[in-house]
Length: 345
Image (cartoon, rainbow, N blue to C red; front, side, top):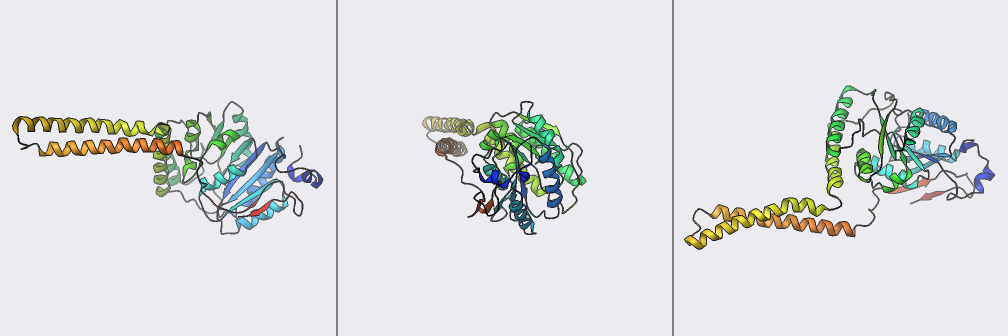
């Protein structure tokens, strides 16, 4: 099948965005990667042209200041297979992915980083593994081409991630992934939760797999990986772990701690009251009375928090999106034609 860029203008104008079927969407968050983008675009368009699928490329400009946005807009205006979502500022990778997932129209969505370390030629490998019955396939950079400190941090992170979430992936934080559409429709990404997508997908009972992918050394710019990102990721992991185990019934967690405290508090107070009734004095029992009061009140607070969490969960609607769009230029447009979709927010 001809790539989208070779379709005739008459054919494109005869359709609307809604009925333009798309098999594969490639979503790429971008922040200050102007030096890497030309090679990425060239390689990606060649790979997609070789696939017998209707495809689109959706770049998400996450507040770039190095000219990446202007370069991406030029491609989006020239190539109807390319779209651009420009965010008002740097909202982070999770927000950029959420924006891309919202606008992607493919039945399968592939994500990769824009720094050229993810090799677009590995996309067919991800898609083939997805056909083995998986809903999400994550890349595994088995032979990492990174500095030693980054590899060290990554190994610590992935070891702790496996222990915390019980999702047995070697490289859960790899941005090179392939998803079935129903997976991204279930994801609610904000903060730094993009690092925990496999765990969130497994929590929704999707089948998660892993495949080895070729990894390239960074040729432009420098990595921002370090202790700060490691700790932020692990804190988010605590949130995800709570979701995995307690989200549907948070009162179970609070009650598991609160009720024993209440029982202990009642025990202390009962013993103190019994002593007072028999001796008429609290001499030597002041500590027990105080501890009983603290345990009793603390337990009641925890149980109450659990009940409030249940009420909040049942009243929770759609999360307010964690990003703001400045401008979007969706795939499928032709400059000057009715297919051009350019909107400022």
